[in-house]
Image 1 (tube, one colour):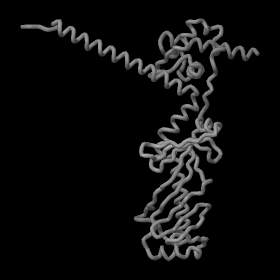
Image 2 (tube, one colour; image 1 turned 135 degrees about the vertical axis):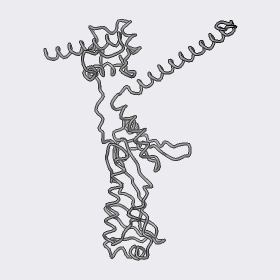
Image 3 (cartoon, one colour; image 1 turned 60 degrees about the horizontal axis):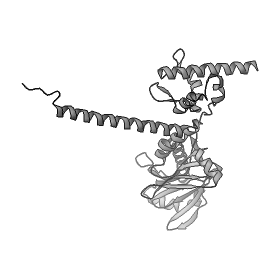
Image 4 (tube, one colour; image 1 turned 90 degrees about the horizontal axis):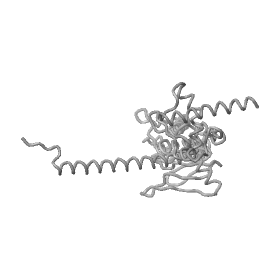
Length: 317
């Protein structure tokens, strides 16, 4: 009990110190490191009492000012009013790449055509699809052979987990190349052109794991598909792999969408439950500031016009 009381008194002391310093100077106290005071400041941020502006500047929120002026927040009840920070460290490896499909340029040779015509001879159980296309299953991946290309659709259960879409995409490419080299060894053929493989990934999905919006939609039994003006889909919310996920699905912009839009936004929401509210507050404050600057500019223009009309500042020689 005594230990708990000491902890509460310690928190109360530093909460009060932070509030008084922000009220006086607009900064955290300077007698200790910023990291030390941020440990306590994040509880006040989580409670909606203070907010960080920029360049070391902090402000008391209008909520706190109102509660303080009405006597609802004071030193005697501050501990009870402050909600402990509930933000958590977001797992960095929270992007799941899946649903990959690759097309590899085939060799331009009669030897290639002969070998894909007799794949069973090389240990592949081939199925004839017609039009010169043959299909085999390699490690669970549907792989099509034809005159111009080799096309591999990854098994739906194959996922690559990483810290970004780019990282999972790179892992998928490495896996694809390893399967290509297996085929090269089996068939005794070379897919390289001037030492390089010429291939394209024409389908991929990148999911943000444990997404808070995905969880909400899963509970409500809803799914969404978001399209751009040209009608192409770029974002989906579904429950594949039994996970609540928000997915970037566009074959051209998927990596960019997950790494610069979806993951940064929802990682921040996961770390700070009040993120959206804080953004709204900042936008409101910024709008007010712009409005004030516009008004000040209009007054300055009016003043300059009046002084010009009155002849003030004009000299004749």
